[in-house]
Image 1 (tube, rainbow, N blue to C red):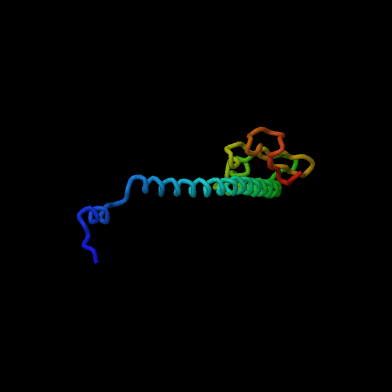
Image 2: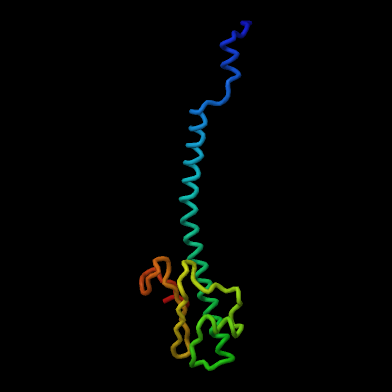
Length: 131
């Protein structure tokens, strides 16, 4: 068996090089970027689903409000919360920070949000009930 030389001992005891660290960091960044991109799609879908659920809850709140008030009137969000038809913890705005729009006509109510683009009357609007 060969006795390790001074040069070989130094090479064996050497730590991790900068290049090796950079390679590991690059691999981690690629993985994180892929996961982030995949998760973003699901995050956007979750925001749409939460807004749809909130709109349905507001619609139910209007129906509850009508049991104690004149059904020909159309309440706003604050009136629903004040009367107790909606919980005080209900979301006052949609997932994108836009205001809820409540329209009442002939004993029916429609609640809608302008959606992700924040522009009313576009394809991404969220309505309860859906049209």
